[in-house]
Length: 99
Image 1 (spheres, rainbow, N blue to C red):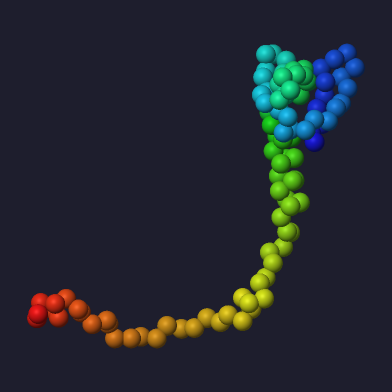
Image 2 (image 1 turned 45 degrees about the vertical axis):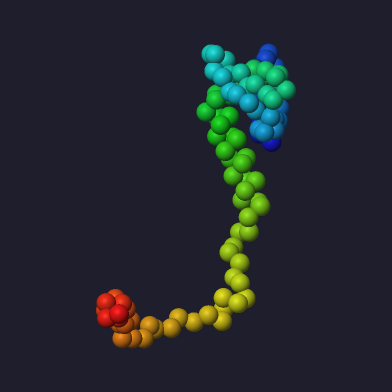
């Protein structure tokens, strides 16, 4: 939920689920259009609303993802091996020409 400020005589705060926002218009007042076709006049600028939505969405993702990378048990048994030099593969083109 993001906190917005209703444009009214009391300028009351309210919380809105950003998933309900369809559009944000600045005409010169900021009008937030919801999926319910309801329009809400707010005193916040469109840039402030977009920043609040981005912060809210990133907090959802940050809480959903682990804070430290997990180490797989089978990865701890892997070791790095140096490559060995080998002779080049045989050229099979000249064998076809001999036929």
